[in-house]
Image 1 (spheres, one colour):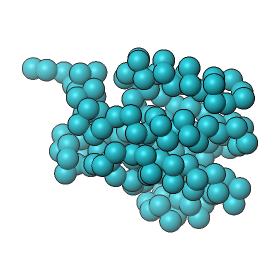
Image 2: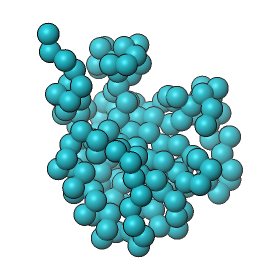
Image 3: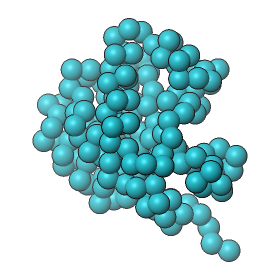
Image 4: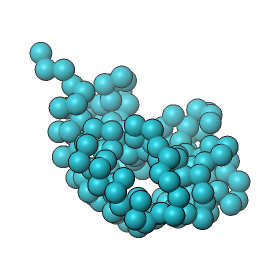
Amino acid sequence: MTNKINTLAEYLDSLPEERREIIEKLRKVIKENLPAGFEETISYGSIAYVVPLKIYPQGYHVQSDTPLPFIGLSNWKNHISFSHWGLYINQDLLAWFKDEYSKQAKYKLSMGKACVNLKRMNDIPYKLIGDLCGKIQVEDFIRMYERAFVKKG
């Protein structure tokens, strides 16, 4: 993955055709279900859905001039990565997602702390990803993020 990509068009043009179709379908599902306030952008060379600085001017704690990340979508050699910060900071949401994944996908869930590794292009649970994207409003995510990461003086 390269950080030289600055626009959505550049990112999509960089994808192999078969992956572009899947990424486009995932983008559509995300955007149709994402609550108001989140914004699609390019961050770290991949597609990102963030809390923009106009809503949360404090920004991401590692880089305060960077919008607060919420969802990431990127293409890798052997998989597509779908990351969702809510899965990392909300154990109830993570438990729900794991349970639903086992019901909606044929193959075992492959994930890290927040990243779901979509390795089988014919077994992506689009409906589940859409449902997950709609579960957290921007204001609720900011509160969760601050509880988990922002140190109070």
